[in-house]
Image 1 (spheres, rainbow, N blue to C red):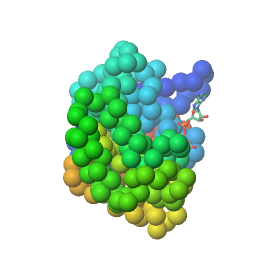
Image 2: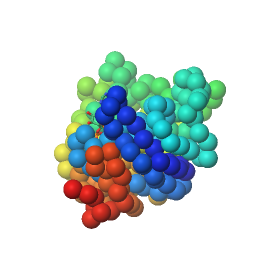
Image 3: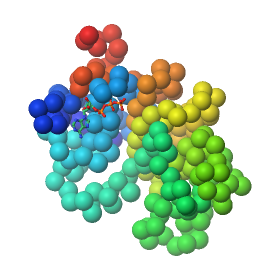
Image 4: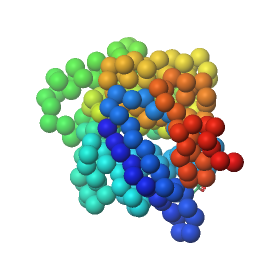
Length: 223
Ligand SMILES: Nc1ncnc2c1ncn2[C@@H]1O[C@H](COP(=O)(O)OP(=O)(O)OP(=O)(O)O)[C@@H](O)[C@H]1O
């Protein structure tokens, strides 16, 4: 799915990432753990094609987007990637249905097909009956379900989730992780940042970041 070779990233003189190497296979479910400020968001911004200012090489499906223009990048992000964030990032004045429809606005599919895709993901995340509600009328867990539905409606190859359970209680977190597990079982590759060991345990593999360096297992993390 993707290959990162010797990636580095600096903010002025500050080294945020150094010598990062990482390969993620199709169908993998990877967790990235690490303390606050260690570089997790910086790394997934690069993986999610939200940041092109890095050194080294990043190939997504064997292709580099380092020199791609903004329009092209937005299209690739829309076609291939789905994003889920800690604070949901839903449009507050839109209904559940309309939020999920957003990624399909530029899609050339017919209206009836779009409706079918949206209804399908609403069922997948268990939000039947909430289509007309706005986010403020939903619980945190339900809002995250909307965000997941929006992330998967375009059937992306890769889901990037940044602390998807960070704002949720443990029972709701389990429900959200069950949704991710089912998506992964159905073939979607997932990369998830989390602080929570129990949440990371849902993934097949965990890597650790500390001070901008990536480690494959916790024992090798240099203190
Ligand atoms: N735009 C920026 N300018 C300067 N420094 C930055 C910028 N963005 C991030 N940093 C620094 O880079 C380091 C890594 O930040 P990053 O957001 O990737 O950490 P993180 O592991 O995601 O943290 P958290 O778990 O708290 O979200 C931090 O020390 C941060 O202060």
